[in-house]
Amino acid sequence: MDDGKTRTSAKGVPDADALRRKYLAEAEKRLRADGPTHYRFIDAELESFLADPYAGTPPAREPRTAEVEVAIIGGGFGGLLTAARLRDAGIEDFLIIEKAADFGGVWYWNRYPGIACDIESYIYMPLLEELGSLPSKKYAPGAEILAHAQAIGRHYDLYPKSLFQTTANAMVWNDKDCQWELATDRGDKIRAHFVCIAPGPFPWPKLPGIPGIETFRGKAFHTGRWDYEYTGGRSGSEVLERLADKTVGVIGTGASALQCVPVLGRSAKHLYVFQRTPATVDVRGNQPTDPAFAASLKPGWQQRRMDNFTAAISGSSSEIDMVNDAWSRSLATLNRFSGDDPETIEKRQQADFRKLEELRARIDSIVKDPATAESLKPWYNLMCKRPGFHDEYLQTFNRPNVTLVDTEGRGIDRITPSGVVAKGREYRLDCIVYATGFEFLPKLDHRIGFDIVGRGGQRMSESWERGISSLWGLHMRGYPNCFILGNVQQGISPNFVYLHNELSRHIAFVVAKARTRGIRSMEPTPEAESAWVQRVMSLAPTRRRLQKDCTPSYINNEGHLDDLAIRNNFFYGGAATYNKLLAEWRADDSMPGLVITYNDGR
Image (cartoon, rainbow, N blue to C red):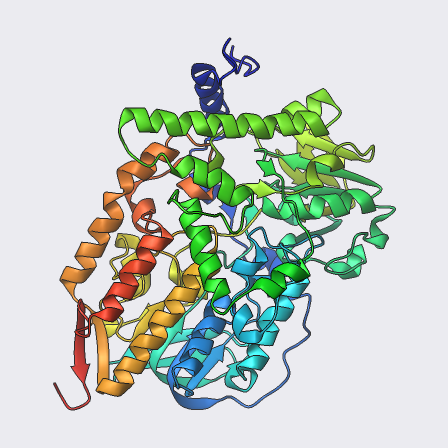
């Protein structure tokens, strides 16, 4: 049996055959016939997991009846950027519909202790230059990012144009008037010439499909709805004082767990961390913003820095890596080898092996107990899961009150009224924290909570079942004047805001062009959609090659990477290529690929 311990050859380089066997064996432990469906949607029985712990009952108000040029669904960074770019283009007639009580999107809901950005704040937090602000740290804490979203709302005077604690629940195309008719759960009736849907790629917390979740009698919540009333403290706290006499279990070891586990380890009487698949944990190296750096910035600095990061992680040559973090250094090395010939493929794999050996060696250098260190080691290629970064997570397992429960790929057996059963043993708990992540790119009707009814009564849910056809993932035939910032068939980058930044500019450009030219409706031609789908699918072989032996994760559809999963996912040609295509389209005054009707009847 290959135990993975013989990993280097006599020459000191990774033993590729031994590592391949180890990686494959570890992936096979975690493959499930039910794939992505083994996660449990939060239904009525578990609706308390979705309750807003940060806002009370929505204040009473009269239903709103309005007719606007643009309706924006979503008040996260995608919606905020779209509203800001519309304002920059001189378009004032818009309305934002947001289910939360404030702006922020994912940063409104995710306020768990220790939360911070895992992308450098100077390139992640949008509109810094426009607001004349800088984050306090290279990786800003979540509370600061939420405050920045609110500052964008104030700077662009978006609060008067927003309906908070309001959920859109219907959207139907009126072909006679060339308008969208929207309804909300507050009785609002909104008619809009254009609609921009900005739900984000991770809209809903997800729970594992573990039997017995609803039976637990202690406290249980998801990291996306942290209960500070129970734990004490607040977002950014170093200690949660009300856990001093509590035994806590954390289920999940992804990005959320990396950040909250150190705080829970300092706070709880005892902490159990239940692990199915270990994360990669590289150095974060957070540090305060250097005043000299702030003083050196020239106009246009943020866009240049975003572009530089994107070039670096794609393996493009650049004189300097401005961001110079674990993301850019690691991906720059791997993505230099982007060809599909056998020699290039093997060079990339060897570089990946070396990187993971480095990360496994880091674990050995930090974690004192050899058995725990071995359990924390990831055995898969770097991009099989979203890479993790932290400077305290591994150290937490040296604490006497912290126990790693490695389920060795099996997952948890069941939840009982008093705790968690894993590998046949029951762990009695006062509190369970589900750090189990979020639904990734589910069907759009599920993400936004209603089906979109387009021309002729066609429903977007049915389009998704067949496989999305779109132009750039932004427009869909049969759904005129509708823009989707949904990431499906759109460029991919670890920095989602970089893409939303470009898409929001593009949307504002198109809406402004429609106003100038008297455009009544627009949607893609069949030929334009077909060409874009073909381009998305042309990258399927490369994606399958890179992810076919990966451990299951949302990135490879939990090991079920079929054509539909690839089609209803990102465009894998990269963010820089995608953004360039949009810029080239804007430079062509004929607006190619769109069927356009005009107010004068043309």
